[in-house]
Image (cartoon, helix red, strand yellow):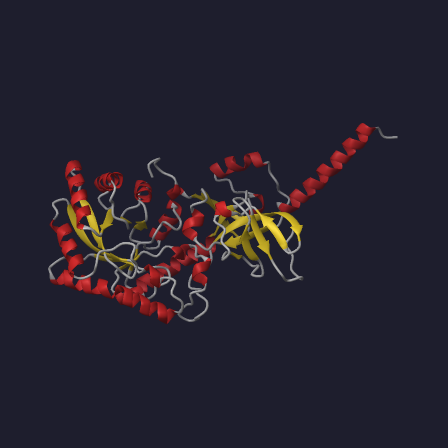
Length: 413
């Protein structure tokens, strides 16, 4: 007769065997201690690192689809005779940026001075900051970066800012590259087109410390206009004033080196409307907001670029019919318009900071405890800002890890 101790030990052994068998099944039979995970990532040893062993929620990049997207944009731009200066607020990654430049991008576009400092510091040239510096801190940093990196450029839309940055540049013996931001259908920034914009450009050009580079005209409202032809008309209408401004500037003798703007939604029409370079950003990964705007060949579906970015999440509770809880919640920027990869019958919801929800109504469908699903994000800029790295995958195998560095940087970011 077995003792209580023997009985408990046998039970524990059986339980351990069962857990090990389940774990092996989840990891293709090659588990390794989780304590090794970060060390292996640090030395870039990705053997046996599959999606099954990743922490969740995690941000995933499908390498093949990502590369396809970057190539598609580069080829379209070359055929249209327009440059690409992609926006990094979407990905915030030097690894992504270098791959864009390898495919022909002439530089980068940034939303913050911190992003500009980080990418310039990583050796990326021709960074354009799309906001004018108006605070003392931003003015000093923009001028300091201009001195350190003569290829850096920023925009202005107010003559007072030109005076401010000129004074700071004189104090630091710096030279500035400046473009004038003009209105293009959005009210958030940009001087009025025509004579006001040309006069501001002349003020920049006459500055002792600045070089006038051209204009920026971002037609953000056109980006998500539904149907190709409606989007084309909206883009043309929004950029009409910028075209007039460029013409007047050239008539006045000003050299206009760049007319920057555009978006993923208008990438294949912006060359028709006077732009010389594209600031498109979302195309590298794509989000659900773009999926429904309609393309050139399909009025309902926009499939020029593929969904290369997902958030991997785990089903960690299943106590109710047709409802499971995941670890992809508000802090990971869950939106009701997110979509589940390969499972369109699931509806994404949120239940708190660390709790997401998946709901369905089809009785023939099911999601199990411990299942892992991938979710397409609605707002890439926000979602990528919630993570520190991308796990880059080919199929289920992790082949690389790219830091998301744009959300870090100096404490005064």
